[in-house]
Length: 97
Image (cartoon, rainbow, N blue to C red):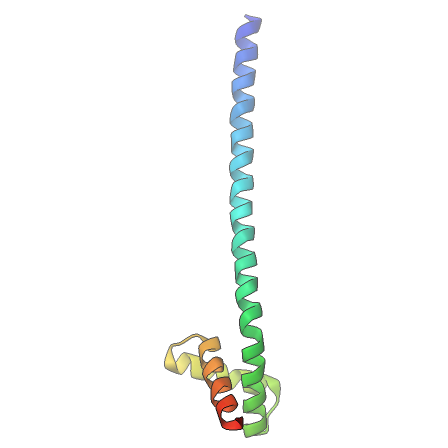
């Protein structure tokens, strides 16, 4: 009878370990997504800051108002904010060269 209980206990432990591994795998996948999102934000932060600077200079407004302009234009065109910012920054670069 003891052998049967040990086998049952071992099987339960295997199931517990598999469940723990699944939870850890899901957590790792979530962390990978978070890191990818942070990399994407880091790439776009500079261009957004540059576009905000262009808007602030042109419209004589502060950074919050400049960001609101980018948000509004992004929503109006149904496009990503960083795309609008990149176009604005590129246009400014083209004018300055």
